[in-house]
Image 1: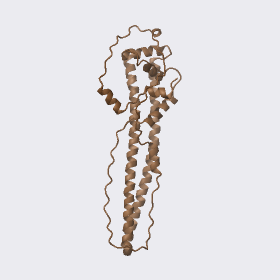
Image 2: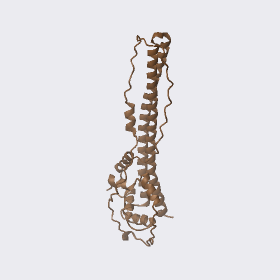
Image 3: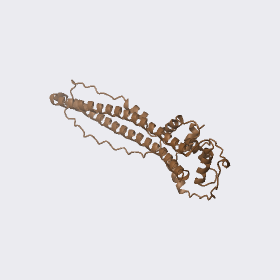
Image 4: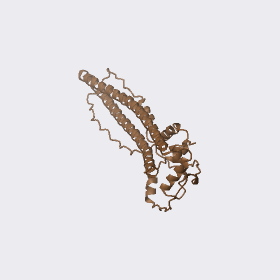
Length: 286
């Protein structure tokens, strides 16, 4: 039976530092004579749930929960005292442009990776299928043999447990569809947060802009209160800039969350495609 820890070890996540270190270290190629005339009953693979080594921590970027926190922020309001008399020499400064925040590179997100792995585990089919086959392949990692021999050996053992090529392909496709459903659920949840968050910020922008317009008109009629009203306008413009900055930050975090999910999804999805390509290459009838 495959558990979550074992399942996660089948889809290993490497961070950028590990990849660069591995690429910089020349690998010694192992030359192993291919096995000939392998019979199913001669190949015995002990299936053990090997625990993978602890991976380096992965930075968890902003997720949908962060979006929700920003949506419910309280905004300060200004009380206007129309009867206050102030000097008439206040100048309104020009607003500074909001600096652009650089986007982080999309990467495999640990939290989303765990969610996808749990979804696959929750949908695990009974019997020996693609996941058990992948586990059998992993059990052969420390045995010196070429890749083709490893795949054939694992499949020969799996065949004695009822696994066929047709079942291998169909169950792999089944788990890919599980991933696809998770992608759809994520997209729907993200869109709901996007709509809620942007609508709220746009409403706040509109409210502040309207207040600025009303108070500007009032300045023309109430010369004795011009300085006070201009000070209030300056404050509202600062708030408007803050709201725009918050909106930009929120949109960036939403985009980052989406890109991290897609990177995670593509990473796992590509492993399925790679495995299926090798299964097709090494195991499918020619």
